[in-house]
Length: 188
Image 1: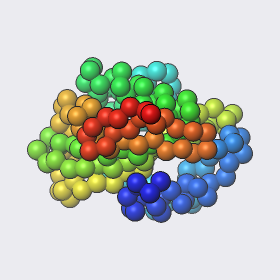
Image 2 (image 1 turned 180 degrees about the vertical axis):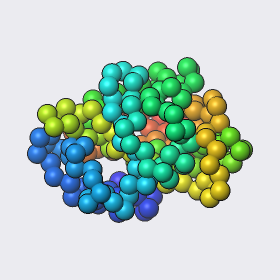
Image 3 (image 1 turned 90 degrees about the vertical axis):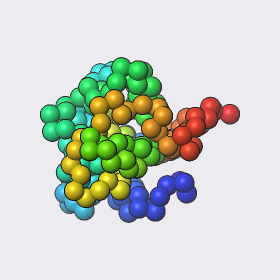
């Protein structure tokens, strides 16, 4: 995981300390709490995959919400995607939950005010109390100007905005395809 920015290391260390048990390689959503993750809560988002194309935002920390460009009204992540980016995003979530594996993504975002900035995130799957992989814990940071609270510009989600995407093996493998410097590279 040397390709990850050093800013992510403390978060990954906290995630790695979480107990595994119900699922052999993943912690449970219930373990994400203020005691274990208090210092990170403003920078995380927890989502639940209810069914394909229905990724409900269960929690979004204030700074994560600002950096990701969410509006308070957003409930289903797919509702903010332009139609041409839905299939690609669904494949991404299917890989994360199905493998299960993690991912590092750096996304070039333009806000409604015109600010362009890089939002860097790590996506890690979590299990429910039965061991089923239904949740994603997403940690993110970025360089959005401090006073900019404008949401992401409408239609700004697309494959051309993904600067980096690398799947992370959490113990059960990971897809080899990746994006580097805005260019997609197939597996093998």
